Length: 305
Image (cartoon, rainbow, N blue to C red; front, side, top):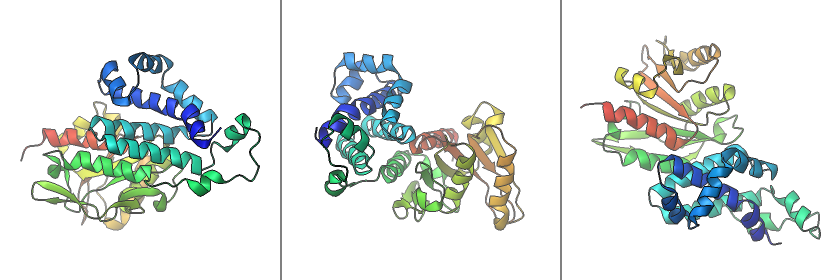
């Protein structure tokens, strides 16, 4: 069995099923999802009856990170819903390459094809990862933000950022963000620099603090503070955390850490009330970059000039 056959048989069906479920949750019909994915409608129905838990379980048994697979499915669904078929093919193929390069499927490969030599490293030598899925996730979320006509209202004076943590991220070098932030230019928003690992320092640190306590949180965006926005982010006041006013810029991270210590459940948003020399902002947290951008856009839609 060739490596290509391995991913075709064991990875693609489950990942495609997760993508189908993501598309269905966005309100698309089964026939529309089938057309987008190039498969039959009965297959979509089969994925629906199988469910996300079962699909993720199959991938986990192979050694694939369920968090990574789930995030990739969300990203690919987002790309498809925006009609970017070429990008869908590119990112999907790149992810499959990554799985092969990582050696995740080596055990399964030897199980179904025992003649493979113990020192085999073919996949690591011939496959290349052309696109990083987390860089692509941030870039895709930025496009969602950039193309919204009211996005400029969300940009704080100090600029904003969108950040995503890789699985098991512990340091800034494992978090993707824009190197030069996202700024307002008239009635538009513009990213200064590209999304890179270690590109954000402050917003990435805040995300790592939250993620260190609640591993399900893997993305964040920081936006301008508007009182009206807080209620739009959650109907439940317990979902919102507050920090500040701060004595100064040097106390921000320490103050945030103290606030998080006193919480049992993760905040959907952290309202930073600012302080001396510190602008008031809101950090929005979620499971994917596109999710936090969509939450932020709720605020933009409710704001008037």
